[in-house]
Image (cartoon, rainbow, N blue to C red; front, top):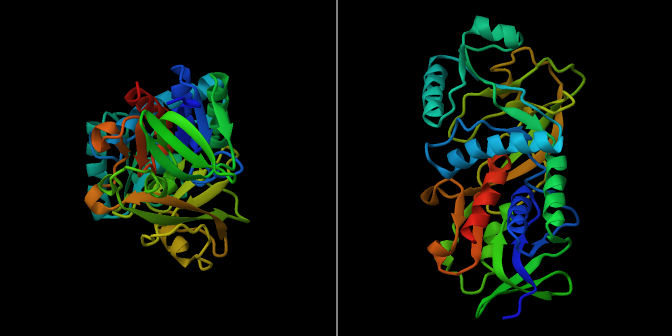
Length: 366
């Protein structure tokens, strides 16, 4: 089959851009298809912009391996490309005996993951870092950071284009048909046909939808998604008192409503975690922020009344319990279609892991 491109990456978020960059650097003539009118406008733009150290995830899970490797790669990349970032550090704070036990288990799990630089802090020791925080004990992670994720996305695109990649915006995919030696993709408002040997579905929350439009892909290899909607709130009318990221002890719903800071020092809280949905909706539903005040005052009791305002909404593509909550990179060895890779459940720490994931995907297609 005569092909237009060696590879087509669907999705121009940081994962898709990283995949395209890695493929292009290996000499693959690569097309990036993006349904929106700009790159990195959904999951890549609706997050905390945190570089995670890799302490939360089950040992030897894909989240663990990609996060630890990806964080090191990302810091090097940001440094070499002169993209704004700061290794600001994170405090995980406990409130009570139950939290203290969970914090000890978290430190043990982190060490098992190769994260050896965590420091245990008493309340008195913590007060030297963050005097406004109340806790029973805390862990300090010095390798956690923040960065300009938008500049990072454009840098990935520039790299991919330097090696010959092409970006097509406003190019939603309607169908992917299996051909004798590759795939034919129908996309864009004019339903243009593109022939390629390789397809990478890196569409984040839309990955299940795209996969169900791939002719010949057995539905057994498409995990069921649920969407976890998370609201963020911003601090207003109050000077930000924090110098570090502040996280509660994680629970079964996620990492909890935490303090994030941007590179300008502005403070934001979130995300919360709504009950799973089976649809995608970015509308801000919580006009009443009482649950934010309650959660934040567990570690910052002096949060003033009327100091929070709605900020933004993010959505995480969560795989169902039976499929697990790890990243799921589904390639030919799993589903049997040569040249096809579906990236499912790429949520946090996907941003941190993006360079490592891109390299792994390119290697699978060698």
